[in-house]
Image 1 (spheres, rainbow, N blue to C red):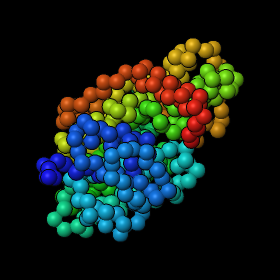
Image 2 (tube, one colour; image 1 turned 135 degrees about the vertical axis):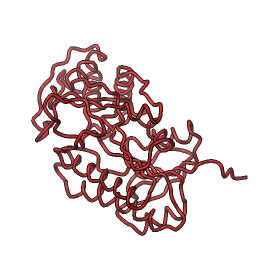
Image 3 (spheres, helix red, strand yellow; image 1 turned 180 degrees about the horizontal axis):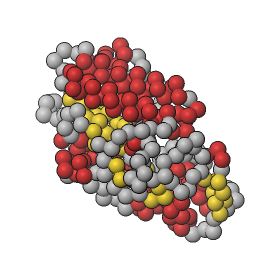
Image 4 (cartoon, helix red, strand yellow; image 1 turned 60 degrees about the horizontal axis):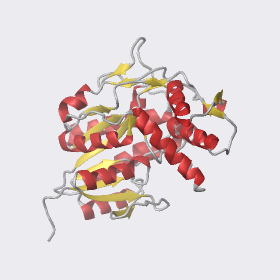
Amino acid sequence: MENNNIKKSLVIGAAGFVGGYLAKHLRDDLHRDTILTKLPSEEINLDGFSVYDLDILQLYNVRAILDQIRPDEIYHLAAQSSVSVSWKNPRLTAEVNISGCIDLLEAVRSIENYSPKILLIGSGEEYGILPKGVSLVSEDTPVNPINPYAVTKAAQNMIGRLYAKSYGMRIVMVRAFNHIGKGQSVNFAAADFCRQTAEIIAGRRENVIKAGNLSAKRDFTDVRDIVRAYGLLAEKGVDGETYNVGSGKSISIEELLCKIISLSGKSIKREIDPDKLRPSDVPEIRADISKLKKDTGWQPIIPLEQTLTEILMYELGEILNGKRRV
């Protein structure tokens, strides 16, 4: 017999890095009936989930799936999330991150007697250039994005706030800061450094790691802590509000790299690769998470060193087993 008291959760864009972690958290920890979507060209290697093919740029298909499933909660993860890719393909980034969000909200609005809780996942990148002397940002800090990805996420946030206010929709916006963990694309610093370090340990490359801007300071959080925050925000987040999700601390990219090199036990040199440098960058940023803590009781619990160790061991295993990721 079906238990009608079990909440039904839909994770849109579940084939990405965060999707698998969120899906497992919702099902295994929060005991949600969890349904996933992916692009037709993508694969999801998770057992025990119902999975639908969905292109969020096809409004009719979005509406059809929502009307069929009628989830109580919608986690909108579908995005073009790489800053570097956003510089190379700003049009695709805008279509997926802005038009896709509008399609989702319009699809929900078009279904009668339906009012799910919607979590729109944005980014700490939205804050961009900060006032002089400011590195700790609250949700009230003005946004000043400096890359195409951040611009699209700032737009998504404003659209979510607009729909919540204008139509009474149950929408919560998130500004997630850098989150890391096993299986992340090497387009991101921690995974990139761990991959290169693992290749050195395995004897597949010389003892030199290529890096971009090492002086920038960022706020890093384990992805498992991040998805815990998402689950709490879907339950306790205030409609129409934005929440920072991060550790509240910052470390330099250089310090991050040094930690990874230390874990390797190798003597490794560093070399700046111009291809890894961004056209513009923010010197330091960290999240003020007092609003999130107050409304949900969340706080990060997994130490950075533990996360980096797990990523490095994962990357080494991938290399030794003959597997490669992008």
